[in-house]
Length: 124
Image (cartoon, rainbow, N blue to C red; front, side):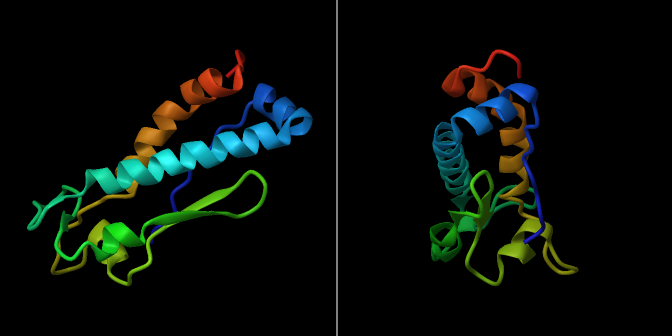
């Protein structure tokens, strides 16, 4: 899977990470779980059109999407099938059917407001 990141680097969040790391970690868990849910809900019916998220055929790809902690403030979202990358990025024979990139783009737009709402940070 291609690497995508959602980054939020602010003084207020840095301060909270030092003073209340558990609160930030729990918020990250919730934000990441919401991203995984949105990815799974984006799947349509099979066959899907080029450029749209994949359609559900067997459900293996959708069921394999999960997240795990990689450090206190890092979360990793992944799928567990070999063909996920081919659907996301396409091949010479298959047009892309992105399902991760749109979710990361959406998360990048939402993360600041979500942090303000759930962590009480005004300076994001």
